[in-house]
Image (tube, rainbow, N blue to C red; front, side, top):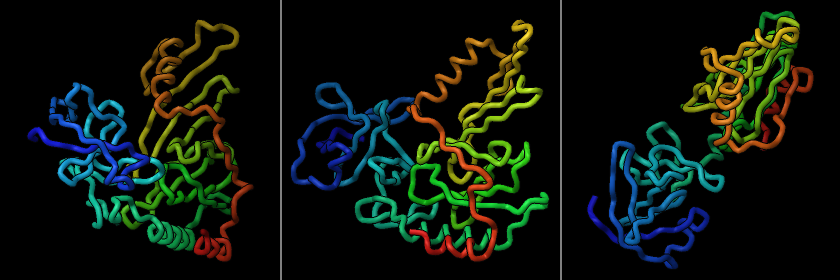
Length: 285
């Protein structure tokens, strides 16, 4: 890209103050990691939108130009392979965006709830218990996820489904004894369970990306309360020291900046799988 006159504006003012913006001269630059924009004073935009030649670009915290979906101030925008924001069109993965580039979600939420209702109408679980269900907001959009419990025994957690590319997609099952833990709209689901008299455990964090499960971190441990030298810790199936175990969790979870306790939902708190309860999904706001 050649040296150009550009406009930089903070996300909170994007598209609303187009006539009240400053002008900077700078140069597009790239390396093995991607593109960034160097201002005349050698600074660069980060966590910020930039208008260049009538096209909008967004730069991550590290200053590199974003592509694909980005979420800023509660809205989602899609940036093409060249970094330019799409507007008044449908994204390559099938979602409508408006004149301001923001994802139009109202119709999609209705579609998702209709798809969940149809899915639940034929759902069965050969477990000896009647399933229960509810909706939760796990990721950062306004489209809820569908949570189903097949029961409340030791191995039964919450079965998470999302609406992606016009269909209900199963993400995974998390938790035990008919419980499910997550951090609302932080895109984090927590899987934690114990066995062997509480001496052994599994602990992991998961998120939803492009209609599939993404493992943030997975760990296992064993505590011998009579002889600590027998304690064992592993991260992603590799044995590590206790110090390395703690550090790995710190590194993996710090980008999510979570300080609150996880929200817990339990089997007996959810809706029974009756047709009237299923139909109520269609009237959610």
